[in-house]
Length: 212
Image (cartoon, rainbow, N blue to C red; front, side, top):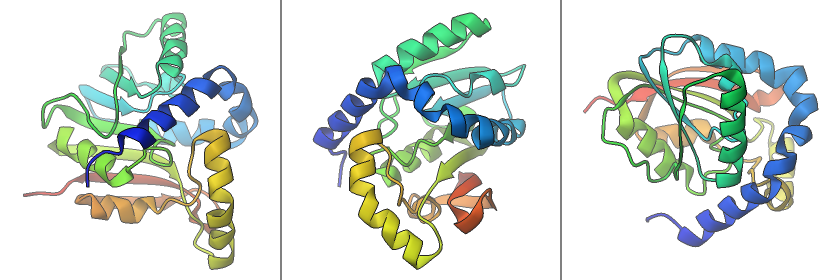
């Protein structure tokens, strides 16, 4: 099965629509939790070539380590326009490009680290997207993800399943993705999964391309 062009277009439209209010909507949880988790996500980055998938408005930019060259992509041009402004304010030399995570326009084995934060909840086909991460990551490189996903508890998980369609329409993100399983489906080799919250909803995941 290939990329669903209609679903991808709807996803882009949603994030274009909410780009202006996105940072404000997430400000409370960003301060309480996300900021410290982003620090941990980026602490283990290896360069020199780093790809950030789903840069959004640039929330990860303050955490970029010194001594690496970051290429950052996003599906939404309106999100990217805000990221460009932030990069200028921070004085960062970032290669920002509009691109679909499901069809990365890079050759194989290009990046030492591929990284994403809260992205694979919204990629229309997460398995296709994760396969692309594995394709562009060097065999000795690493894939680092900060993600939220379906709760371990079945009662809570079922509630998330029921609420998911409404959340997707409002925010663009699926709250019931099974991202750890999706990495395995994509053929990636999981090295570490760290629970960051109760019920395993938020996780830090480190993986690598599976050896041939």
